[in-house]
Structures are given as C-alpha cells and as structure tokens.
Length: 239
Image 1: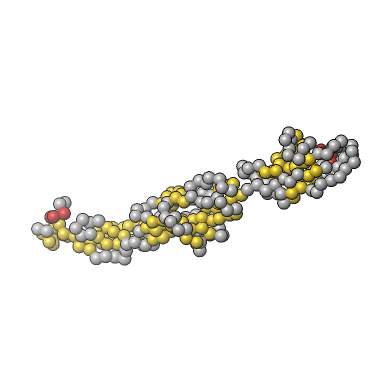
Image 2: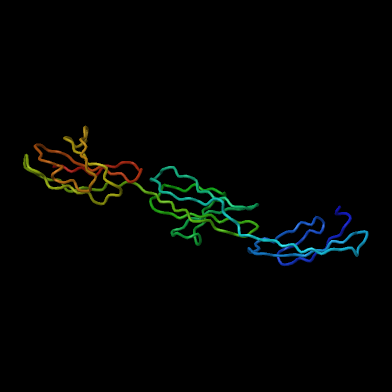
C-alpha cells in the first residue's frame, strides 16, 4: 500500500521505536542482547476505522569479533606484524591498550592507537599484553588479549681459563647464564678465531673427551642462538 494512503501509529516499547513516516524500527544504543517486541497500528486514510495492529519481534545479538589480535614472539628490534581486530557494526571507534598481565581490562591506554590495527614495539625485552576496546551503537566491547614477547640471544660466560700440561686432557668447559640454545662449540689457535673449527656439541658442557689432548694453547667458545634471533658467541676460554 502507498504510505500516503495509510496512517501508522505506535508507542515506543523499551529500546524499540518506529518511524511512523517510513515504518523503520530502530533499536536504542547499548541495548542488551535479547528479544524485544513492538506493536503498531495501520489505518486507511479514507476509511479510518479500517485498521490492523501488528506486533513485530526484534532479536538483538551481542557484537561479534570476526578477527581477533594474534600475538607472537619476536627478536629484539625485529619487525612485528600488525595486531588487528574486525567486528560487525558501523560507526565504530577503536582504542588499544597495553597491560602487564593477561587481562583485557585495567590496561594502559596507548596514545594515538585509535584504528583497527596496531603495530607493537619490539625495542624492549619482555612480555606485553595488548587488547583493543571497540565502541559502537552496541556499547563497548574488548577484544581478546594478544601476547607479544620480545626476546634476544645471550651467550653469557663459560668456565675460567685453564693452565694445562702439554698433551694432557683439560677439564670440562661449562656455559652458564645463557638465553637460548648452544648451536655448537668452536676452537681456534688464535684469540680472534680467524679460522674457527666447529665442535659438534649442543650441550652447555663441553666435555674433556670432546676437547681432547692439547699440544699448544687453544681458545674455545660456545655459539648460542635463541629461536631465530641473531647468533652470539660466549666469552673466550684459553687453555
């Protein structure tokens, strides 16, 4: 029926209202999820007693994130991947927060981080927890937490230098305080390791059996790597 040939009347019911000119039903902002109903009456202009009353049911659902931010481990100063959120809704605003615990509340507002994506810093070692608060007609909702851990490689120190008699077997060498795994050990005839010789051991202890008997001064070091971060060499031990 042509809208000009009928009249529509309705009384707002809870969060629902009807535009009597267009018949469009509107839901108030911040309406909790649930089922709501509203009734309206349509009457014929030329026959005002010819009316019909209709009740319409409206279901309001919670907003749904279609993309949540995903954390990762990064080496210090490595380029990170954007954290990103996506949510169904219109006229949305975003604000990212960082936290010291795995929680999407009580965090510290990140100044200027007001888009649907955020690039975390990898300059500082440690773990940070990021989340995004999205505001729209549905109210406010927080994303999941993205855990970003920044690591590096620390080779640390090995055992002290040793004085050993020619053709005798030295004591074991041990690495301590390292962050990462031993990739190998190396030995060299010069302190600068101009031409290092690899020793196939990934243990933090280089045994005397692997060192073998020495007939001249020899230099040893451990080679350490933490995940994909840069390789680091320990201090040099002189035997």
